[in-house]
Length: 385
Image 1 (spheres, one colour):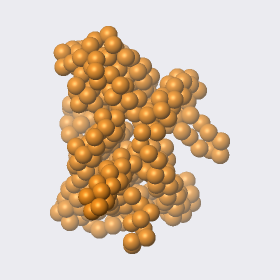
Image 2: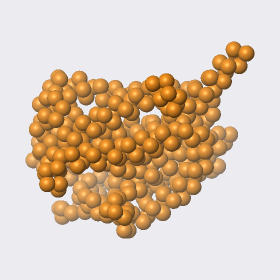
Image 3: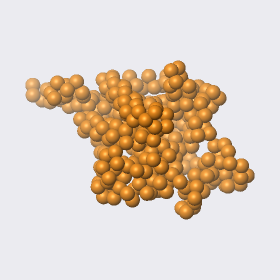
Image 4: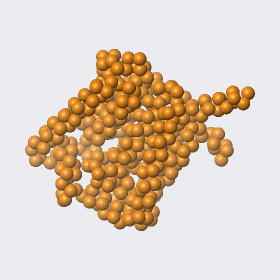
């Protein structure tokens, strides 16, 4: 254990949270992919668990390597990465694979795919953290600070929006919160929020004025909003099955692998994996999952309060807020507090690109926390002398 402690640096509580969520992920994915296995793998139920395990292992490797790199190096790395992410988003809109009536992923060799919005999310947060740090002396100015900050946000969110409205909205809110933390003029932020609210109202009005032709991404958005508003809608199949899973779970759940709703819920291994967790582990188990994400955010905020450099603080807050906010949205959808969004549960839902970029994000948080530990150790040594 002491040797492992020397190899693994940074916040040990965050490492523990990641390990617990990964173990839960393996159990939940194995349980929820039974129908998928019989449909596509001839009943080989281990196939998806082994595949998911390999994805998690590679994610851990990414996290480990990322946490070893000094966090200040990410400032320059992700500035370059943003200039790669934006063309990839454009490319996805034209040649991306069509999933659920939206072009979200780029095809890769060996039947693999790459979700470009995951790269764009992390790079934009990094870029914004760097820019906020550089602009602190003129942060209240409109022309020299607010405009340079907003341009990349509008470009990236605008390119993600056609294929994935919820991801674009989540990223936009994260950027607004990060700008608030970065002391950007509140008048500009509230003006931007006002413009966003008005734009959303106009967008919803246009959706409701659309003809009844049931195709295209616009109709999908309209259908989800209508189903959420009309709680008794027959088309609200996903949420109804999720509610049944929650009721069946009760206080302590039916036990690992005993879910019955996995056979009825669409995408029980990704979008609605939290419903399966509630059914199998009950209210107690699902509460622990919520607490794990809150602990992750709490530890991140502690890192923000201790790191003396602005870039490290902005970086950790932006990345951790985005991860935990996404988790809360996924869980809120599963319990019918929000319309269906398609957001995966970070580190738990089955997926490739999502898990890898989540792992990379946590590795960066650990890199910053490692720096704090190093500074504390140095101070202790100096005091001992």
